[in-house]
Length: 360
Ligand code: NAD
Ligand code: GLY
Image (tube, rainbow, N blue to C red; front, side):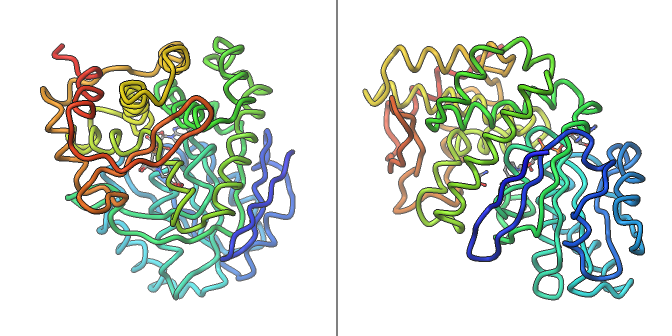
């Protein structure tokens, strides 16, 4: 087992990473000081892992709250229903909510934990690759609004994160590949070791080689922990973690969160960010090409048919929380790292988007 500590102003907390962790007794119990745990999950994930999680907290009273699968479940109705459940069953602040699932469960469960009695104990137990390398770490919690993704939420750090690689065994391949997009994001942000691992082990990664995966997850969480420690509430450097996301969120929104998985939309968004940076002369052709190639070698989508014209994506990007002064606030890769730019609506931006639109 490997352990990282994320240091934040809200709290410092451990991120445990390893194989078979939910089947092993260890000090995760110490993060729940009350006598009850609520496991928030969905039927599919719970059928595989809820019994093991209950066994991990064998001295507590267990409750389980299941929501249906899918991005559309990250909504205010489910948020409110889980709060009703906690109130009805008289949960206290020192009882624990365990978010057992992918980013949808983690974001929704995290936001419930953030607001119930002004903050209850929270353990993130991510089961998708995307959640293991990104969403379970760093304290962003949210639900979606019909007008946009993650519009209602809070920064609320978990008390511990338990990443058991073995839970990936039941993750569908499409979901798994989608999660790789967030790892590519860290590589483009300048993590040379991640870039090298991705480029030299592509086939093994697609086949889920556990030793390489454990390294990638550890390095990804370490990078995220480092950025969050510098800028917990995204006043500056943390915005870099949104590389590819402004475009990606717009693609998800236009396709009503139904056509693309989050990581797939982010992958197409990464291509758009790379295009724009190259068009603006900020990124060399050789680096742009190696990033495009890496994304496609990993089996991530390159193009979208969610719309016919860039203007549709640009309109959908207008509500992005990062925008300031009526300009698009974008993260663009350079040859060594990434930078934040304020970009007005212009020809290059449209062109960068259009390069990834297909009419097929
Ligand atoms: P998800 O939570 O919908 O999970 C993907 C699918 O895989 C679901 O159908 C789920 O039931 C299934 N699944 C998950 N783990 C499984 C397992 N081990 N076995 C079998 N099936 C499993 O999607 P996701 O890609 O994990 O997360 C996407 C969400 O995360 C989005 O809502 C996105 O906005 C959010 N997100 C949040 C942050 C953050 O910092 N908070 C960062 C990135 C993404
Ligand atoms: N996924 C971006 C962030 O956590 O800031």
